[in-house]
Figure 1 (cartoon, rainbow, N blue to C red):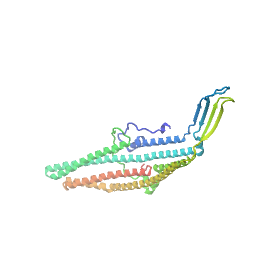
Figure 2: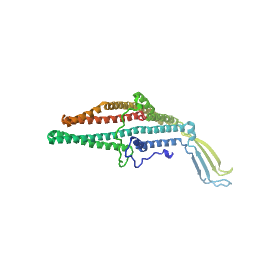
Figure 3: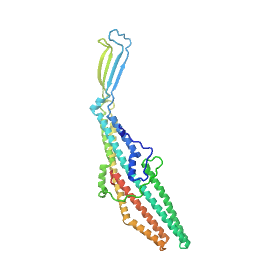
Length: 423
């Protein structure tokens, strides 16, 4: 095995840029992600199995010497010391003739192909997970900004109500309502801070951070929610067909079926006995009067397939092939389900973002600003002011959540299809 084929070990420390972009996160994960390192190790193991299958068995060489008792050689060249030597091909010639070695290599090659595809599938799944977790980290930062802005507004409202209370223009009930709204906003800030830390910790784990989490910040905004050209003209059926072409787990299942087919052929071929070719040499003494003149002999040895003809291994190989066929069909059905689910989530998120950006968010902000102005002029009650602020916050949070859902569903669609859709 070359040094480049050896599985990589995770570094003891992980450097993360102070400002971590999505591309930075993906690059770090591809270099250091724990699950990708495990997949590399599994691939290296499959390569080792192939090397084993390709190897020729070493010949077995034997040699010996002894002594013949109660014999006194009285002739020239006679000896009481016999010597012998033998060599066996360990069944190599027969394996080459009947094709057992070739079938063993086929099994190992298909297993290696499945391992490589499984590694690609692990990268497909985990890259999507990194993208989704990065989106959640950005969302948590956005919601923290919303919480801070809300707390600031509620604090200003509470201060205004206190001023009016001292001048007799507001009731104590209004002051209590305003202070309650302010304290609730402070509670929301603390909860948002906790969510930011949790999302950063999850992202750091995916980036193989094992010790203290380094300080880093993600982007402060999500990208504009626009439909990529690769998705714009697509349908659920076209994406399902694309997924069947590109999903590595489906290709890995196909490779496992081929490996099981080769394994069944090998199990059936194993019914042919392993014949070993043996050559030997024996000598005791020299010349015409030697007890055992130099003698060469050749022969074969094999087990007689009388009592057992590999029926158990064949039945086991047939069951494995049946299971792999079922597993392939299951993965194929899962591909269609993944695309269907991701497509439904994407179309829903896209519709919600479009509705937010076209009218809802702007109208909620306009209503909040107008009611705030009216309250400062004394034209509306505090209850209406707090309700307008609360409605706007709900709509703003819903908008950011819809944006995050848009990108999350798009990354899930990439996972389902098995190819990048976002340029």
